[in-house]
Image 1 (tube, rainbow, N blue to C red):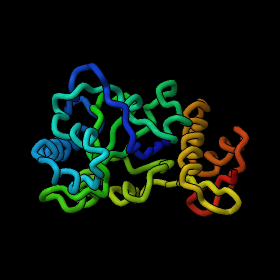
Image 2 (tube, rainbow, N blue to C red):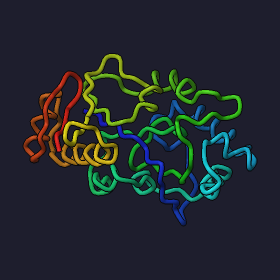
Image 3 (cartoon, rainbow, N blue to C red):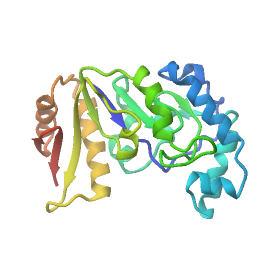
Image 4 (cartoon, rainbow, N blue to C red):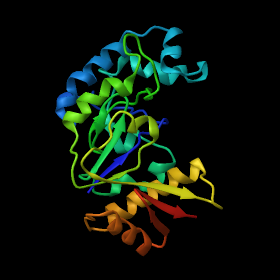
Length: 231
């Protein structure tokens, strides 16, 4: 089983620690693309940088992180990424060998990979890089394992960068009174990932995932390639 997580827009900037070492990140075949993006971000100038990154002036301080990413302090990804999903997941206390976190800057990283805080979404349009999903598509196709069972908890923009072709894929949706609520979907995906990682088992099929989630007390139903959670 491989669990794919989305990144979080909110991040906790490490206050100390050595800078990122690209050669030490998971999936080293992605190093060339990662380095290219770091160089592009380092050359951005303000206020135009906010337009490229799709950010408002109120987020200028976070956008300025991107100018010095090669020198900035780095920490394990599970400490840098924050937000509802990660609060419910509690990734730092769980085994992370079966987890990859999607990223517009890094492609994918492991929870233990040391990274700096950055601000870059998959919808950003950078100089000479009009489409980040298109930039990542071929490198990810060659680097990411595409077999077995994949529990895909990413959002749409990140699935556009890489879609499994051969693996069995199951996504997770959440419903409140028959409607999807974004905040609750993120929380539920964090809960599902925590259940799977803390179970000590290695599900091999969507039915196995559903059984583990039901055993943990959630109302889960398989619907095609999705595990639907009723809240």
